[in-house]
Amino acid sequence: MHRSHESVSGGFTETASDYEDAVRFNIEGAQRLVLSIPPGRYDDVLDVGCGTGWAAQAVIDRFHPARITGVDPAEGMLEKFQAKLGGLEGVDVTLAKADVEHMPVADASFDLVVCSMAYHWFPRKWEAAAAMARALKPGGVVAILMSGRGGEQAYRDVISNIEPINYRWVGAFDGNLRSVPEMEDYLVQAGLEPVDIWMETRVRHTTVEAYMERMRVVAGHMIGDQSEAEVAEYVAKIEAGLRARSGPRGWSYEFAKLFAIARKPA
Ligand SMILES: C[S@@+](CC[C@H](N)C(=O)[O-])C[C@H]1O[C@@H](n2cnc3c(N)ncnc32)[C@H](O)[C@@H]1O
Image (tube, rainbow, N blue to C red):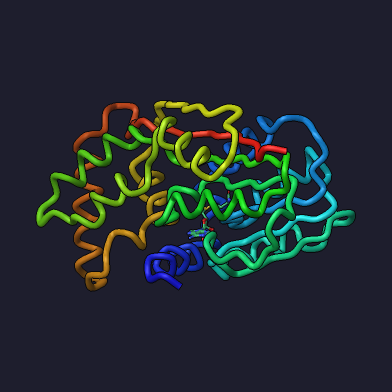
């Protein structure tokens, strides 16, 4: 497996038990993604970067599929998924520890592929779109939610002014975030027909503590491979930077979510 997959999935395994408390926006995002899927019958569903199963849960609630396959390289996330959805009646759940480019699934075997808040972590986004498209039956639908370009600028301003500059962490945002036209390109190149692609930008008001916890859970592992003490010192500087820029209502920041629905030609 590629090294960056290992560092991302290792990070998610370490923070799996805190994930659901810290990332409630991801839960609500998965639900809204699933609400945006065209009505239809989706018996065979693939959830890519399935995590603890929020997107799968929303698909089960809305479409009652017969079979659902969850793929994720993070063992800790799969354990939570299994505990949450493994015993449900009426749906066969299969889980696989794998990254998006090496999914152990047959081509053209799914009516629906969902991928909620994971695409931004994929290091080869063209390959990822192609892999998801291959898994779809003709006429099948893919639904993707990821972090959008333009988000978290206030945080990026803070970290790009902390010295010595952590180029890996500063650059991670450009590597991850994508725009509507970029997503359209990925989908079209993968042979899919875009149905609906849109970006939502919101201003979130929170506390510095809650923001730092969210970053620790979803992306702390990206900060670097320095010693623990160096990471702690860097994190303390980030926290001080956020406090310096917080107003009377706490820390506020813009967050962009990119949604995409596409169909494989019948
Ligand atoms: C923020 S979580 C989202 C989980 C879930 N879809 C949800 O909405 O709650 C991102 C997930 O993407 C997974 N992931 C990261 N890199 C991946 C890759 N290369 N292939 C597949 N999944 C990956 C992580 O292990 C993690 O479980």
